[in-house]
Image (tube, rainbow, N blue to C red; front, side):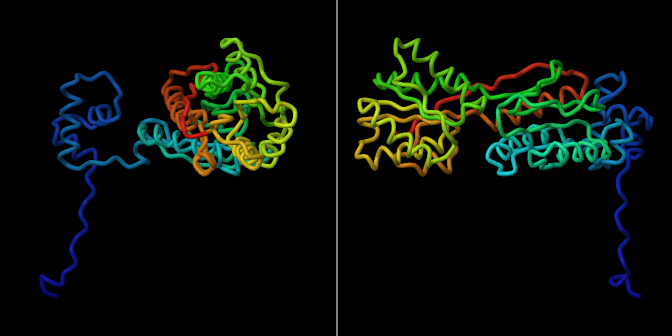
Length: 338
């Protein structure tokens, strides 16, 4: 066998012992410096980290777990099979988790309590460091469990547990922003078409709307049209509204899907938008809002920010800094042509 055909020996993986030797410290000191533990002088930590960088040292996950007692994994249980709310929340959470060098296991409970408890057991068996529970509605939900061994943060759907940590959207604020915009653009005869009264989001957005109307010295035209979160309901309600109140000049819709149905219904009735009637929705769901005719002015609930904040609070709790209570992420208006 010639020198050219001889197999090359695999490069040996750089270990923490190599880092300790390069930095001129003990193995224990090197370990503490790289994991941010122990009471060391800052110059010692800096020397060890510089040695690790020079050698290209990358600690294995197994070694890190043994040293820290953590797995650097987080469970995410979602009830949103459709993904309308769960995906943006998850995308935001992943931003913060990646910054914390964490990875997530995603579990879909399909709004089934039995399936949810199954996922909880499996995540705890995997020794995750914490869990995010992402809901698809803003109604208060039951806690995942009592005396769980890891911290839990509830995203979008708040927990009813008095000592739990939840991150939610500002539903009332969304209603206030929408009506404030309608009023500022000269609308004085404002109606409301929204989803089911049984949904907390529909009730809270309607309350915010009433607060904004009162602040501008206005009253709602007629009663709110509570129905379904569908375009069909929006079209039907728009026709009913025009028959009962033909002088309406602004409509606040409980979400973008309803708003798209309303704009279709108004346009079919010969109404010019936004010259005769202005329409504002809620959600800023690009797939719907941007495709509407005209494109919808809407309120963005900050779903990705809810995910980012939930992950940040979970990381804080994992590190011994829990922040129980309800944390509200503000909404913001996105102005388009409607």
